[in-house]
Image (tube, rainbow over all chains, first blue to last red):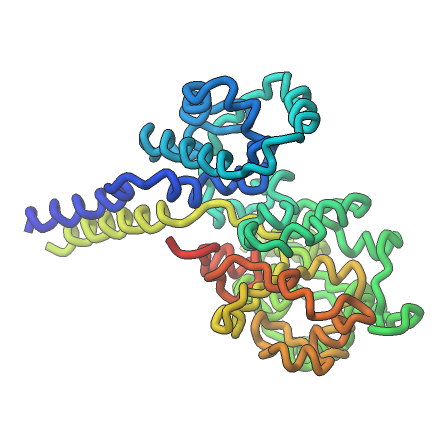
Length: 305
Length: 138
């Protein structure tokens, strides 16, 4: 029994140790380096662009190995993957240089651009400390969401394919959001405020830009169990965006007390969660909805029981 | 001796989880509300479609698509195909070269990494309930 246990744990640990066989330069480039070097993120020399590499190669291959292994400016050591062996990193550098050599047309010209790039990069940028890995589940806490996590451009967002030409033609969300009021989560845009204050005026009709929405101003108060403040649901902000038929009767029966709603259901994408947590602001800021203080007498009886 | 066995099984489960977690690629930071639709795309040799909710809600209120055009509140729940779009249904109601650009620009919509599942990215369900890895499986 004990031997079996040791064997299974050893196998599991081997799995942690990663692939035993060394990866080729091309494999390393395709899986790791390409993340920045394909698009030229933060001034990284791009794959197969001779002019990006010309100046750098003049420092000698040894320096390039050194920078790749130990990090340089925005380039993290070993491309941010400490599991790579030194030989694998060198092989990756060799592969990138061979790609640049294959680019005959780009070697001539481009000197000005390169010079400008060098000038801006003259001041050594502070080296970023290695980021601790935080699981997505922990990041769900709005207090752990950082400004930097908001609105990455399509080629860097992890779901658009940077190898697709169309990806680079898409409007980066940051550009569209420049003037819009900010919010701590979701798109990091306060859409309700953006609409109310006239930053945006989306059409209510597909063809006619002058059709006005039918707004109903009615707040529904849901008294909730426990010590959380009661929920105030404003019809006004919802009917400015939506049609009654979007929610009634399929998601919410339009009758007081007829709907069973729980946070669990919402987090699983039902009831309010049909939109909140997918498109509309996510349910991270409790007081956005739980906004009505319970009457004092009620609070007191609850504490004495 | 149930207790030690339980403890060791829990330990093994933990190690296995770590192995799985180590294999997941980091850095899916997709824009909140981006819908990946891969009902038929990849089977037909195209990249999955990525629909940017944010881009559209700047220009149209929810009602236009979700009430007038009949889009259900469910990623992949509309069974959209190119024939319907060219006939002016769903996306084709605007993407017809008149209100918005025509569907001849394949790679503007079909721009997702191969292997993505149909789902809403950065959604609460995806983050807390069923985290799905992005990109191709290595």
